[in-house]
Image (cartoon, one colour):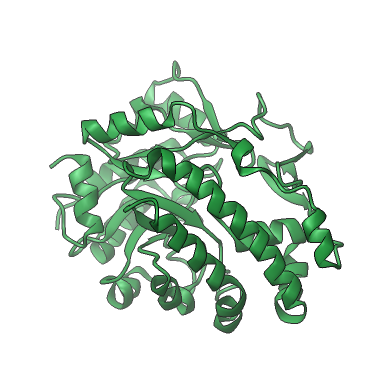
Length: 375
């Protein structure tokens, strides 16, 4: 069984020869310092470090490392031509993306600091905002050939990332400010809907441009919106259904016009109270499976939703990977596979990108343990 067959079997809720492994995607890669440490640990110092996202300070994982860990996926992602600085930003340096959202690097992280619509009070101000042009945002040169070549080889499962995260709610609050957008959701709903409308229209166009290039070749397509905190969802199910769900549903329906790929949705946090709604609008894969959040225990998730969702991730990046011993990592991996892999429906990876403090020994232990797992 090769990697593609292994992943597709798991996505079809059938149990493959071993749990499939993912590394190197938008939410399953490493931050720059962690990657440099991993390269040194593995003796791969000759590999160039290619930055995936300056905003998130993350990297493309080199093919040599993917093969070293027997990773079953390959990620198909266009280059960002609207925002592609040549070097990483320095601490305390403020920079702006194509949407006019400002961030400042602090301690290796890009923290939001400027919300261009924060003080807006009218719908006219939303319209007047200098919205980025999806046609000018990403460079698709060579992307179709890359995807077709990998598809024809048939060795790996292909995961589509349209360049943007495919988020609607998150992008709206990036523009507005989190507190301000929450107030809009409760007290200024016309404004909230108008902002979600503009963001969703942009995301639909971005998805269409991307999927016209590679939609026929990919097996999974990623979208994202962080909807959860540590203890519960960030908004009530009623607010989610009124303000957010309709736009997510519209985007997913649009995506499905251009590809047969399974829809992978990334949301951190405690979101079990939203999962039935998310499944209803066509979400088939849940990432990152933040098992340390309330109600996200992996055995219970499998019991409640395992026949309707594939789980992708689940290896703790909050405590175990950065602070645990190699043995702690092995216990974590064995537990998640035990809980989530029976009958298929599980792809193993880290809960979000591995941060600057994750030791390379623990990265190695994660994948080695998964490969060696026995029932």
